[in-house]
Image (cartoon, rainbow over all chains, first blue to last red):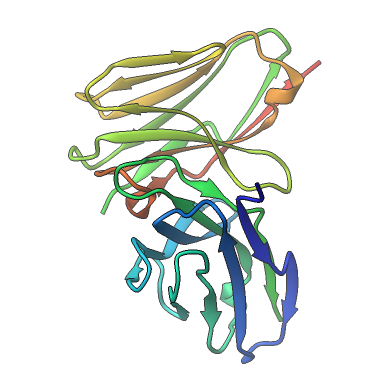
Length: 113
Length: 113
C-alpha cells in the first residue's frame, strides 16, 4: 500500500512561474489537506477538501489554489510563485470527520528564487 | 483562532531517561489533541492522541496527559531509545478530522546513546 504519494520530491522554481504540486492517495479517504512547514512555525493548513468536489480555505490560503475532481487526487497550484512560498509542503488525508488520524505524504521541498 | 504553544523547542536526554514535551492551547472549545512524530525526510506520523473526556492515555512507553482547566497537555516518553530521536508536534482541534488541526512549533528530541 503506497498511502500518499507526492510529486515532485523537490523543486527549484523561478519567481513568477506557475507550479502544481501533485498528491495522490490510495486509501479511499474522503478528506485531504495541504500543509506548509516552515522552521519555527510548525505546520500550517493551506487548503482542505472534506470530500470529492468540495474544497475549503485553511489558515494560509493566499497565493494557492486546489481542486478535488476525484477521491484520490488533490493538486495544489501556485499561480505565480513568490520567494515567501519557499517551504516544505505536505499533503495529508483522513477518512473524514469520523476518523481522526491524518496520514501524511513524504513532502515536497519547494524553493522559489 | 486557536493558538498552540509548544516547549521546549529542543530537548536532549540520555538513553533510558524520560522526556517530557509540553503544549498549551488557547481555545477552550478544543477537544482533540494528537501528537505527531516526524523523522528526518519524512512526513509526520500520529503516535498518540487524547480527547477532552479523558485526562490521561498511555501506549507502551508513551503517554499523554491533559489538563482542560489549565488548557495544557503533555507528552511523556519513558525509557527513551535512540530511535525516539525526531521532531515531535502537538496539535489541537475543535472537531474530529485534520482540517481544523492547529499545530505547535515542534520539539527536536535527541536521545544520546
